[in-house]
Length: 67
Image: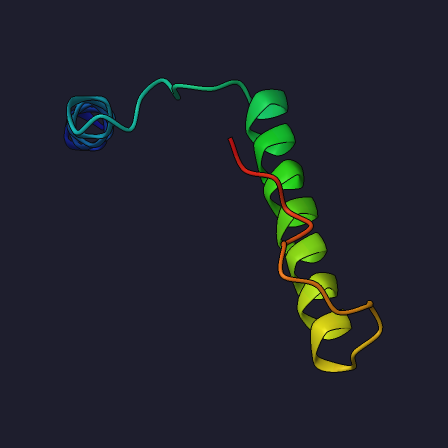
């Protein structure tokens, strides 16, 4: 029994010592970041398909206004 407790304690302390303890973001914040990234990637993919299929009128400016 002592060996099991010692092993559990060692595994737990190793987990926290390696930086895997507390996350930098809450799960809600992390899910919002992921959803925002997926949305941006989806918009970029749609823009690429529109350009490939020539669905937008020609122009020299991009529709993405980066600041």
